[in-house]
Length: 564
Image (cartoon, rainbow, N blue to C red):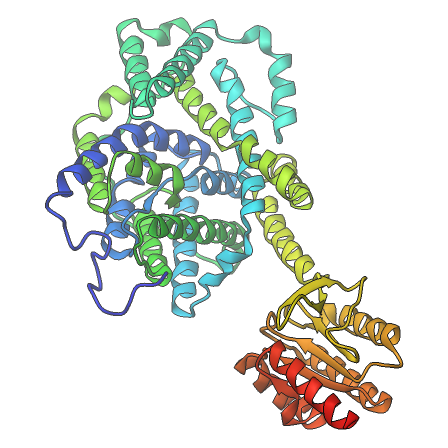
């Protein structure tokens, strides 16, 4: 669904403001802030960034998308998938949470923004379609496993070490005797509060209550003195506006570009899918290209305000939906609340136990593990399940950057597979001018001497061998009484050079055999392609028919003339 060119160049997600709906939108924004503040603090940990930078993702980036995006529902902020890709990409280049790390994170946000704006300018947003739902489920499941297992040592008060989840868990087991009982107790309490709140009602901000409780107990009982690590001093006030402090060079760009491209692809796929889903649900229009502009500006805002990359968030979007929000006014409200938190409430955050934040992140990872989705794929499309599983395993054991590349590759392979071996058919009569497809392996004629072959996909180089083989097998099986051979082209929307050459060879062979080749239900676009490829010159302009019924009538009339 795309927005028309008419309307507001900005504020498309806000205007027109519906007075009756505005109070609900504002309330939904308050709910979003309550639920998302502890979540984005967790995402900052996934990204290896200071906790305060998570709050920054709900400031300038959120305002910019609300002003310049087209979706009335998409919430933009920190996201687990892009945060994990960021951490993987920078882990060998700088120390997490350091000034250099954040400078690189800002550079990645700028580069991703550039890719988003470029894709908007040259309209290549369709790249998002090359991440299928199947591989997205596998990719996010792999990210979830990696994130959740990576937090286990921190929840126990241990230092995480090891490259992959298996190594992290093994090293955690080896040093389990040094675990902090206090950290474990804090983690368990946070998990219990969040899970209990969700079971009672999804509207209860369990994570926020758990974080506030952990801060209170940490300050009141001096948990730091009992071996429980806390975040420590958190800078207050608004972020400074400045370009990332790095020296741009060709070598640095080459190092950062694969990570920026991986995040760009995830943003494209996840944001577009979320916007499209909610626009369809509410019967609204949105412009994917306008959303790309909003996402690009949001990431520029992130880079200039000292935080990391942002993305369209399905979870935050659903938070607003559940609370009744129907416009970007909810995100504006949430951003204003974060603005106030940054001005007046950062001091208490310094008492937050690190184990409490790790418990929040652990649950974020668990929620990303889509067992239900994997099970559904297995029962509905077993072959696609293995694609999802391979994607998940590569993310877990090789890394998220390798996972996103594999996800794109497997999506294209899955798509190619569907067209590489189309399930074609032949058509038989099922009453007067009623037709029914049957498998090619059980060929029948529509009328004595007339066979109709239905090709169910675009004709391109990968399936031309099947086209030629099936046609020749049908003709050989129907000889010597076959006079007309019709290709039902209703499902064909493209014929490439290789396929056109195959059709010319088939037409020449049919002419030598005394068989007439005709086509039915050819679209105007495909007809133009066949004219350019000289097939029309071989078979004649009168070989095209609008419907199969027209083919049958023409064949019977010709047969009757010959008989007469």
